[in-house]
Length: 422
Length: 121
Ligand SMILES: Cc1cc2nc3c(=O)[nH]c(=O)nc-3n(C[C@H](O)[C@H](O)[C@H](O)COP(=O)(O)OP(=O)(O)OC[C@H]3O[C@@H](n4cnc5c(N)ncnc54)[C@H](O)[C@@H]3O)c2cc1C
Ligand code: SF4
Image 1: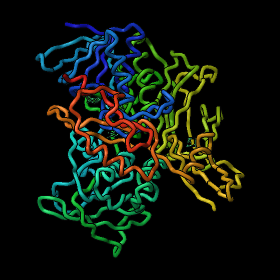
Image 2: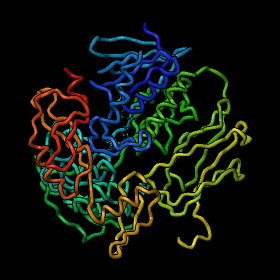
Image 3: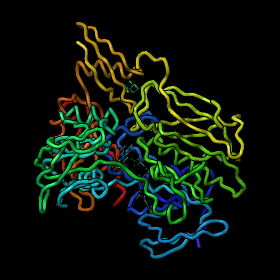
Image 4: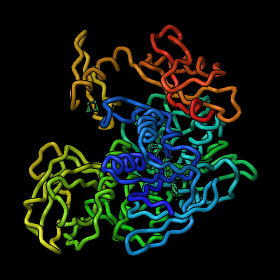
């Protein structure tokens, strides 16, 4: 049986970075991908804007990921494409993975695993829409895949439900290809995508954005013929009398992403109820010793640059993994934060540069992030504005914070007091 | 004249206030220098990049992604799209190679952004 120090599952940007950094740390590394080529979801994200933080350049998705793919093929990392993990077993000193690929069925032993399985889209089943289920209802990612990888036009005239970034990007993409995008409908009172995508994908093409509005019903037998939209109140209940019928042949859903963690759950990894990704410590190790997680399966990122960075940290940690007694401090958030990663601090590690990622629960201007240790103020950080669509990254020095086992580090966002600009 | 706009240069998406007083244009709300430049050109001659795909003659890969190598005037987006849609690639070109040189004389090339045609031979 082939033996590895680190096995990375998923060949998207997080997996590529994890494998590269494990290899740099001299670990014998295997990279497993179920598709025919490396690159993950970025293969279909042909728009530009990737890599500004990491490379200082505005690259398209395929260009961004090509750099890492090329680097991987220049190393000794074993790459196994079109490969599925069918079964996982925990042993005393690692894991046995049962794999299926074109060469048949094989098993490998690995000391550690880095989960880099990305995320998937919420689908029509997960949003409440009445009516039949005709053809012509796509998730934004499905539409992106069909248009950008297969050159298929999925619509002549469509409605987009949800203002997530992929939906905004697809509004522009479909418009460029000659489709008419009737509007983007968002149930919340704020858009969930980045402001720059509202500007460059909608405003540039005069595509209207309707806030506090949702799709109530779809019409059509074989193919979608129309949707019914309606305004909602603050409690997200439909306001009677505001209904409007919009003829269209497609409804594109951009209603959110969820971390993909089937394998993690098989391995008994605990998921966090806020991120829906694994609960991890500051080395991005899950509560199952030797299993790490990075990228969008850990929490949904909005910038791939952070995904790559996170993958590299997890890959290095996996390569350096040794089994030992650990002591933990806990991390908690109040309701002003949507989530935080990691959820625990391993006190036996280097605490001088602890990387954390968080999202606010709502938009707050002139915000102050308050960090307390066992109730005592530890640190504050000011932000001009925090918004749920924009993930924030923090690097903390906790080495002299006096953390002991069972210390609680709590995070909360408050509005700066005495601020006249509101 | 005062205009509010979102700077699209980086993911921060700062809300800019661009004020024109005769020849003088002042930009506020930007966090960095690039935002100032963006605000000024946005008022006088807005520029954009576009990304799309071109068709190929190969049955294994129907389309490949492309982008313009430099910004083009916003008003030229659809004319450039028309040019891109005329292409039918018959050579297995690699990432960065030109598919259309100096498209419509705009001093920008249309270049491939993926190496997929080279990989899957
Ligand atoms: C449709 C869509 C569009 C997006 N658009 C953007 C965008 O425009 N800009 C942006 O910054 N971010 C975008 N994102 C977020 C984007 O996913 C991240 O930026 C980045 O690609 C995440 O990298 P990743 O490696 O975590 O996941 P992914 O890129 O999703 O890669 C995960 C990889 O794991 C593989 N995999 C999953 N499960 C298994 C398994 N069991 N066995 C083997 N392999 C497996 C998958 O095939 C895939 O290749 C988008 C996400 C989606 C879903
Ligand atoms: S002003 Fe600077 S920081 Fe703000 S969005 Fe523009 S480029 Fe980014």
